[in-house]
Picture (cartoon, rainbow, N blue to C red):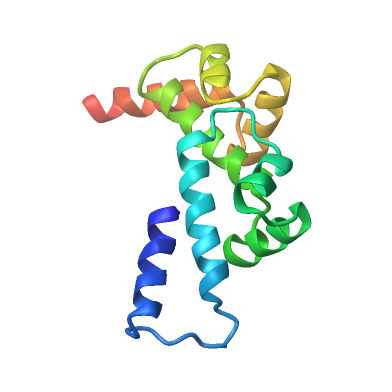
Length: 141
């Protein structure tokens, strides 16, 4: 996401793209690029809105509003999506246990991880493992 925002920012700043509305603000865009880059590198750590506020120098409320404006999700939802995607990779590609994948992805509570995983993916982590294992098997045939 951070790379995508950087490309969009460069297109706008160089005049190759014109916004449909005038709500594109260079300062907001730069903050989002920095924030998304930081989140991409640190999402497995414990992150709070207060930390994001300290990093950017903006209030928690302002960060949430701008984040939602640019990504259509809250910062916490964005972080959870990153963590779930990492867990999916760990479960399917690295054959980690569900518990190990959850903790390695930045979750501290296994039941919370399983509940979020099902919300985001529509299946439990174990069902996901079984589905990806079945798909790998059928792809190998």
